Length: 94
Image 1 (spheres, rainbow, N blue to C red):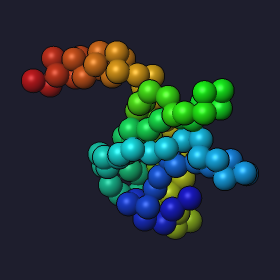
Image 2 (spheres, helix red, strand yellow; image 1 turned 60 degrees about the vertical axis):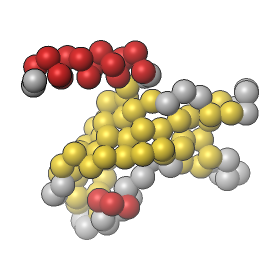
Image 3 (tube, rainbow, N blue to C red; image 1 turned 180 degrees about the horizontal axis):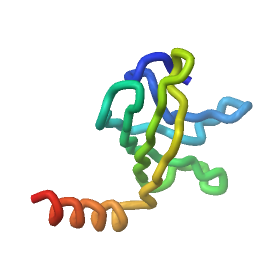
């Protein structure tokens, strides 16, 4: 949990220190007591020992008790789905 929006990250390691989620980039879409952030990330594949394809996640956070806590998320599974979302938004908001 973070006290500052800019410190929010989805990087994640297991108990052994293996990085399981690697944040590549993030864009803060809205700020305030409720904030929205879109992350570009990769997940570690234990079988191959490598990070998988890039994915995206849109997450909402609410500041409670001085820290931001995740309230909801929507994961974009890959480039195809991301492209479809982008096309729809471009069509609606051109």
